[in-house]
Image 1 (cartoon, one colour):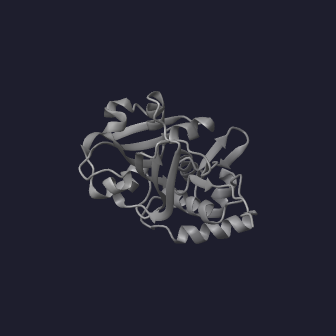
Image 2: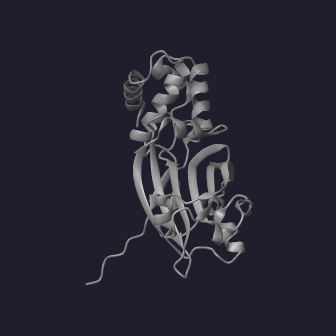
Image 3: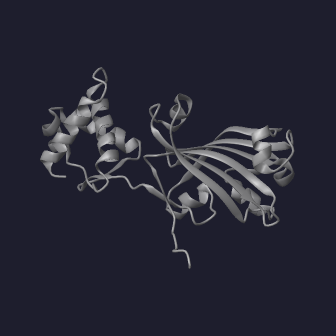
Length: 251
């Protein structure tokens, strides 16, 4: 977009922000919306001076808004070069990999915070997903997954206790723990849908309630057909793209 297009778009998105919020927050939100809805081809943002002129805000206000976007991972500042739109993470649907593997392969620093790590009894829904009897002993993991300092996903995972044993076996990556005991899954079924994040999950993912997320449900299986994992995940819609390679059906 040229400067005139940027100015028109910014004014439109600023008009949709909460007027009682501080100016830097309004500008941060407006830029976030603009990049999400109209900036798919944008690689670099206008400079501080240009954004100040477009909005009538001070450069201090603009700088604070850009710092907020950088903290969210939406933009990256390069000294002497400008502010660039942060790269989205593209996750392939054609391979069976875990969160930790995906981020390491992209040169990012995966980190996990356990919100729950313990044992329990399978609920009827979990029992059906894992093809076990209701109240079968299971391991439960609720994890907040980070790329660096940015929360990217919230995962709830259930694993039959007979498969893995102790919840402490998972230090960060479930698949690494399963690989150590020769029980890494060989195939999985996934369902993906778009959802609006609820208030509790939004707080954990550092999003506003109602923000767009991708909900992914995965059931993974061992070569002998036993279910080894049932996971429901929420991925930030502003950070992830999921891609799959398709082939034409043969006649």
